[in-house]
Amino acid sequence: MASNTHPRSILQLDDNCLYAIMSYLSLPDKLNLAFSDSRFEDCIKRFLRKDIFQISEIRTNFKEAQIEAIFREYGHMVKRLYLDITNQKDIIYHHLANVHCRDLEELYCDCSRQAKVCFQLITNSSSLKRFKLLSCYFSENVQFDEISFELSKLPNLTSLTLDHSNITGKHLLVLTKLKDLSLRSCFDLDPGHFMEICKSNKLHTLNIEGCRQLNNVAFETLVETQVDLVEIFVGNDYEASNFDIVALLRNLRKFSVNLSTFEDVVRYLAALSEHKGGSLEYLFARDLHRIRDRYFGYAPVEERFSEPIKRHILKLRKLKILRLPCNTLVDDDFLEKLPKCCPELEIFENNYSSMVTEHAVMQLLKESKQLAHIDCAGDGVLDFRLYDKIYQMIKDRNTVPLKLHITYRDQIDLFLDSMEYKQRKQYVEVLSECIRSIADPTQKRTAAVNKCSNLIPTENSSLSTSQEISFLEFPDNVSELIVSYLAPVDKLKMLLIDNRYQALVTNSLREAQIDLNEFCRVFTFAETRRILSICSRYLDKMYFIYKDGKKPFVYLALMESYKKDFIQVDVDSDPENFMEDNIFLFD
Image (cartoon, rainbow, N blue to C red; front, side):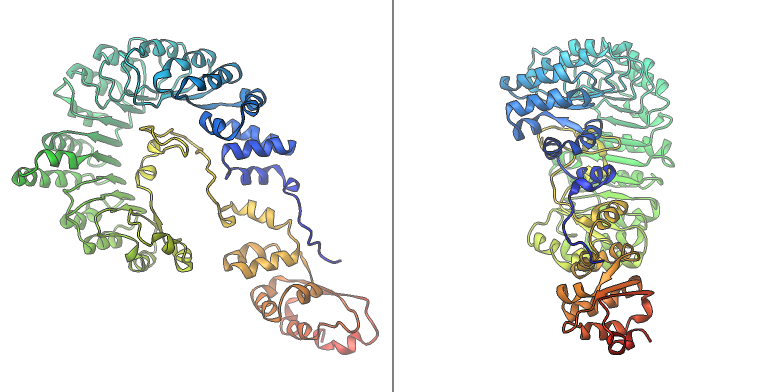
């Protein structure tokens, strides 16, 4: 039978295939699909249980009547709500969320001076597990202890972020299931309340950077009670003088610090190298360049602290992620020792450093067998112009592929569009984004909102974007299912587009019946030769209609070279002389 070349509707794909395709769409595009046909409704319901429902995306892509319909139809399915309200006009969307989104598990509020709008949502969401305030700029008359009072009524709350607020902590004492707590720059946090919070919860992550009132007893209580704490964010602007005892936390694996003096940098790192030298996996020392600026003109002071800082870092033998952004202390000697001292290093950020050379960085790439991400952007040493050399090195290294984070912009778009790069990116991929979004999942940003200081953490899903996605980036099972709906001749066309389709297409040709007449009509002789050279061993069945005067002699002659691969040849309208004319195909 002749193959069917008519295009098939996407609606004929099964739910799993539709779901995989829709996962690459933004939330507005998914909702538009749901409005276009009821076939997509089951898929959108699944997405609304895992995707973040961001109000600003809805507001900018739909009219008011459509927005009301969206909330009315799908609001009760939303589990993760991003509430970004910047002016009084947006209150209508808060009202719609209050009425229809009553089964939330995660709530992210970026409400600026309208912080009180989240009160009712918290009250209505008794199943809330995660709450996060995202804005850094709140009106002074907003009392966050009132919000924390509402939060204290949530029995299932496990993750709480109240950064840059005037919270004292008095209502949080009753919470007992907290795992992740961030109180960054909460200047009014009472040390007594903080100690009670520590006694009531077994935390996994904690951010107390900038909580100035914390004293020695508070830090001692923290170390005594938090036996499960894995990650901590700290500073040095405390009333406490013993803040470096956080290195004694039993299960500490990730350490992030923002300091103001070299003395305190050395103090923290000395404690970590002594107590966590064989267990710490993540180190992030932020804004070291700002400390250096304070010592401007005092080179001996910087030199005095530079060596101990580097020495203590190199004692952290289990480091997998090392982030030293804008660090002027790292030099060639440090990079030479790093692969030997930290052999498990996977991610290294050392951008805008003025003391490293190309040779040292290339040597680091060669010897660090597990290194998967490197960010040396801004130093003029490592950028995509060295791509050929880096590519050969990583290919010869024969371990994990490398992602190269850069900021050099000149001609990069032309380079990234080149066929040579596309063929080599499986070994070395060039990224123009900073390494932060890779190294620290809690620092990703939403696509639509850029003003927040922190990104919404997602455990097993991310915000979808409308970025173009290659067909080859679909999961194999999805791609194979889509290809299975194509006619055989259309599958063969894919072979002429890109060699990377070869494995995908040939796997689906085993049961296909190829019409020789379509070869004549669709492909040139040269194209036919190329297709057969690639996949003749996968073409088990050949079929054609013989019509006198239109015999595809040259194509039959070409087929003769590959006849050993065919196990079935079907002929329609066979005149008496057909076998005599074409016996070469069957002998």
